[in-house]
Length: 327
Image 1 (tube, rainbow, N blue to C red):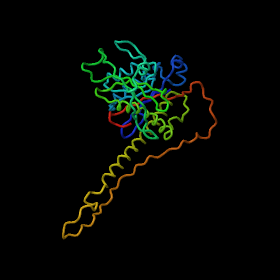
Image 2 (cartoon, one colour):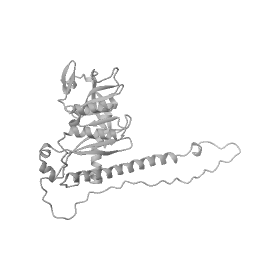
Image 3 (cartoon, one colour):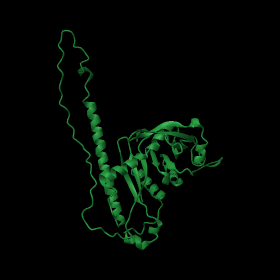
Image 4 (cartoon, rainbow, N blue to C red):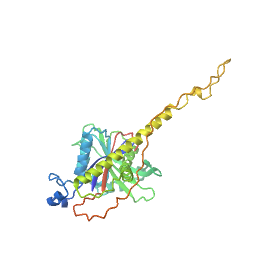
């Protein structure tokens, strides 16, 4: 199983880091690890530990990160959330319905808190645009009391519990924990929660365009080489697409006619209208994203893969660059 991070901005999104999760059945069998060329110093690490390492690397590399989103596997990890809080990074992370919410007044499950919410606590909001238009859900959110141990006085951030309810099936509810600057609006929290779909779009694009999932590896280093190269190719295509989009917007602004050239202002008395001036159309380099089709493997006899073959499934988180950037 692979742990991945994507970076999303208003210009585009791309996968930026990855780690291969090795279960204890692997790390406890050193002969098996050596056969797969896994370094001896690579011990067992949970997915949460790998995710925390990825976040640390992204922050150390200088990525401008204002928000982090993640699925339940990471959102329920207190150490993951606390790392983000210590770094001053906001988050909206999914959690299971059994997630415990603790305070001086007691301990509750998050689904119990949401069940007790009044009907007028729900707001119909969009969490971003999808393939079929805005993704509309009913949202409920409640601010949690400040943590006297960790939070400054006065606090700069607040913690929230949130729930997203389907319009077509009200019994389908997703739960979230959030850490956001003071003064945040619920609509903004909903938008940040929806930005987690960016990594699914990254996976789809990287698999379709760059062959992210087209590999059969038997060695540890082989997995990293293939995944890293596919991620690099996907990031390159994403940068080309962002550049082409930016140039198209700039060209549209430059060729917009001046108000005096639109024929709306009459010529002064006794003078003929000036002929329209023709300016050469600016030339810009043409940037294109080339779609790559999936190609079948070369004609070769099937290999009987040994037990040391490494396979992965994906788990993910998203880092966004600024609060106002649409997902």
